[in-house]
Image (cartoon, rainbow, N blue to C red; front, side):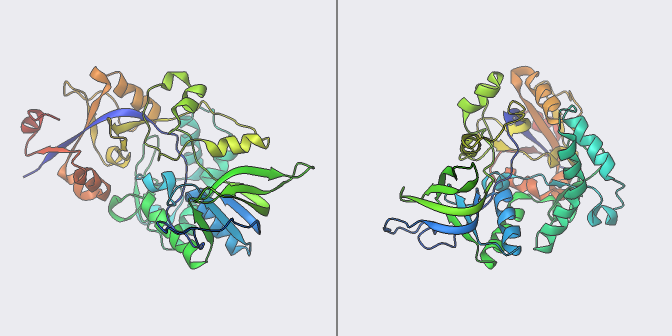
Amino acid sequence: MKKWMSLMMAAFLAVPVLSGCGSSTTPGATEGKATTEAAPQDENTDIVVIGAGGAGLSAAVEATNAGAKVIVLEKMPMVGGNTTRATGGLNAAGTEAQKKKGIEDSQELFYKDTMKGGYDKNNPELVKILTTQAKDSVVWLESMGADLSDVGRAAGASVNRIHRPTGGAAVGSNVVSTLKNQVKEKNVDVRVKNKAVEIIKDQEGKVTGVKAENKDGKAYTINAKAVILATGGFSANQEMVISYKPELKGFATTNHPGALGEGIRLGESVGANLVDMAEIQTHPTVVPEKGVMVTEAVRGNGAILINKDGKRFINELLTRDVVSKGILDQKDGVAYLFFDDGLRKGLKAVEEYFNMQLVTEADSVEELAGRSV
């Protein structure tokens, strides 16, 4: 017998960023290790990476491959950041996975979709880099053991191009585990609970390193030839959010709690220019009051959105801002994701929502409608 399921949704705040997941290869920086350390000594290295998310760990792996000595600083007790929370997938055009499934796509179409989704506010040069090189990111991650063999549809895409693990499982944990294994294998110096507090410049304005605090709050300096800032977003900092976009006051976020924008302020302190700070994205499918983001793959695999009157009110695969507004315009500003057990069998990521007891299910539409959600 076919079963029917629903999830209650509301639009939440989400600044999409990459971050990383939890490993420490530095004595005294291991998670959960309770030791009393002497005052740390100043150090020298080739590159300091601030932030151990997907971006930071990727930079650390590539720099190490190129022969550089790298130190990664991560203020949180584990690596991963927002990348760990990513469930949907990685958009790329022209991949082997697409070809195997007979999906006709092109980098030109990917570019057009991306520009359209950004209302042509996007930087064309950066979008060109994204859309032409994303396929190389898939190859690179897969070469290290990541599973990106499944291809589905995400909102705003003309064709199936979002790459994810087999069966539609969550992508973030897979990518983070892959990168975490790489930095461990390469003995990269990753320091959790170590916070960068200042980027150092010499009298000529050249960046020469960072000042940091270890897990005991003791200060030390790392002299470096280069500093890579890969610290993610700021959606967990409500004050900072409304300073750029006041109408988002009161919006919750699905970003991890460490996404406070401190890295952005570090960059500003040494003269970095900021652009598009008010272009903060809302995600349409989030479980109210729990901060749980429901992957777009649920809609991409066929779930529909219905309001409290049981009516479908929008094309679920329109861009995030349009779908978010559509939900907020409904009664009480909420809607329900409605799907059957066929979707559940075809998308492993859905099991997380069942495990968290967020889904109401029944053997018929009539029975489901009569249950309180």
